[in-house]
Image 1 (cartoon, helix red, strand yellow):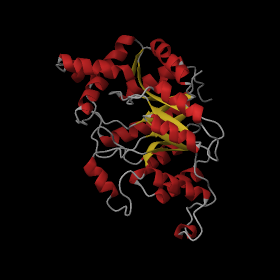
Image 2: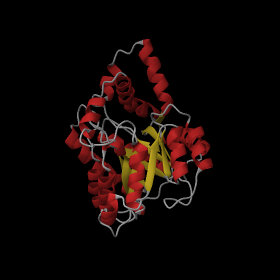
Image 3: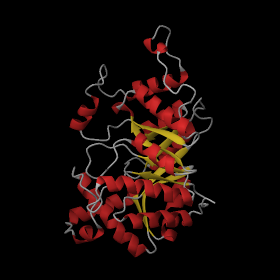
Image 4: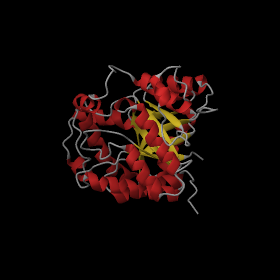
Length: 337
């Protein structure tokens, strides 16, 4: 059995405004908790009309409070946007409130456009360029308390100081993330749903080079995939039309709310656009439960993934919950008793 989890972007659609999208995330998390999904991760994006949540830590607390056993985490916190001390304190608080159920996934991308990136970071002084490694090292030091002698941070304590950070995960879409995760001995989540790197090569590289650490004794790799399940292949194809048009627009820099299947099916694609959609479909799994199981299982096995994490930006919330149910049934998840 392949363990399944969910990555949620709190998708805004042409019929679902941002506030409703956030409430839908909470509802879907409750649903996934009852079906036996392992984790529910929330992403961080800013200034995108298609994504409602810029603050995964706030959503994590809301979702953990209304679920029972599913792990809830960030997929991820974009570390260059935040002071490491703030991240340490917020996730220690979450771990204190929901012990053993929180994950801290970290990314190095800004999750937005250059102007918004500047607005997020303009008050974070003393750092220029790609400072992800510096920030990651500082975050780890808040946990290990191994600042050099005489360092001013030795007098600062990340509260609550009786609670450790939750498990750390690095997110990646290339071999860089795999190598860094392996070197530091952390969990690794690979973004197959938008990566151009070969998933099999990257995930095997992570496992082959993993070094045990205080964070993990053994490697653990999550394969994040985009999937749309429905009762029939034809219905899944109809639902996936929304994602086809949305991806085409995103590739042009148009981050609009997710269109309806009807709008997408009526769109007058040019031959070049249809070719682009076909290329994007190589990273999208669409079909009935049997079709998806037949397509996903070989990829998970080839990647030697420990878990598959599914992202399903489906226009209709009820259809998205149905997709979640069908995938759980197809992969033999055990519902909560």
